[in-house]
Amino acid sequence: MSKLPFQLGIHPINWVGEDVKEHGDATTCAEILDDIQRLGLTGTEMGRKYPTDPAILREELSQRNIKLVSQWKSVLSPIRRIVSRSWTVIADMRNFCNPWAVR
Image (cartoon, rainbow, N blue to C red; front, side, top):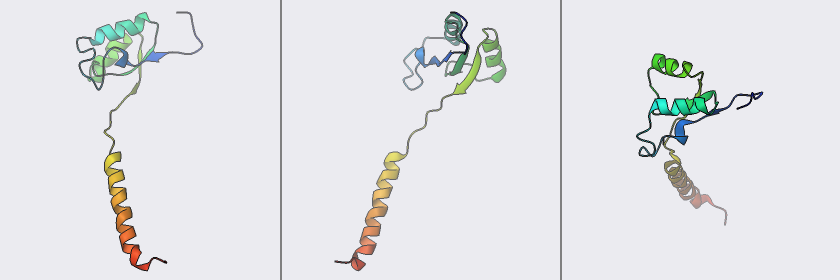
């Protein structure tokens, strides 16, 4: 890869699923990092196959001249509960205000 005026990185989800655990289950951390290095990329996001011990991860990355640049976190959205509660509050307000409603 020719020298670019910027650096590129990639997320390991291209090798291993974060939500679908069967996707890439047999893939190792070393395989992912070696591929990233071969592609000429210099950054990666944290992935589930990477060591969670900071010293070990730092060593694995530095051996390949790769930097950890971010970490994705899965969060279950409470939106369904919030919307349901909002409609309950609106209904309660409507019922409370209804006797005073101008007709």
